[in-house]
Amino acid sequence: MRRGWGGRGGWQQAEQPPADDAAAWFSGRLPDGWFTEAPVVTVDREEILVVGTLPALEGEFTDDAERAAAESGRISRFREQTRDERIEIARQAEHRYRRKVAWGARLGGTEELFTTLSVPVMTRLRQPERMVLDTLVAAGVARSRSEALAWAVRLVGEHADTWLTELRAAMTRVDDLRAQGPDLT
Image (cartoon, rainbow, N blue to C red; front, side, top):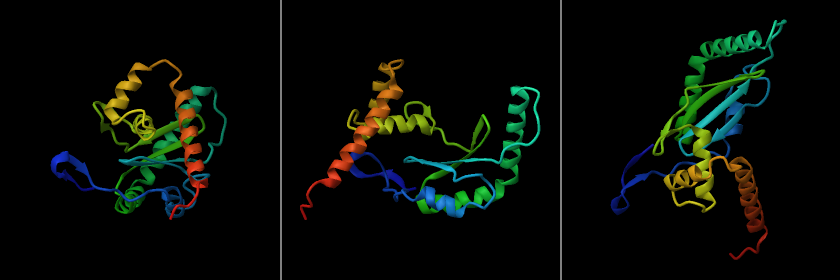
């Protein structure tokens, strides 16, 4: 990814290619048998996160703690056994989409993320937190991630999840209405 001083505006980030097809690309690229279903692929400006569900464990467990330990152990085994291939797939995806690739696995009630980025936005935030800020910027509620962060801090504890879901639905509805409008070309 190219970064540098872009003139009077200061620090600029080069345009990135769209990653709208990332979920399909990963579904086609990942080896058969890694996951029981198509992985969940989440994309933002810096990172693509790929989280897949591993095959269920067999056997009986005495309690939830024992089951959770077994799930964590299986995820750890998956991480080690697939490391080289995941690195190669990530290298290809990073070349294609110009974003870092992070991985995770889910099994039963256990989900573990590995190789995820922590991107500075006044503080280090992981992808789910950055996506909240990007939604506020995209909706015009804030002009930047820093302004969105300040705005979000003021609203902590006030049904943020419900409001953001409604905001995303409204943005989708606006996009749908724009698409239905007249073609002025």
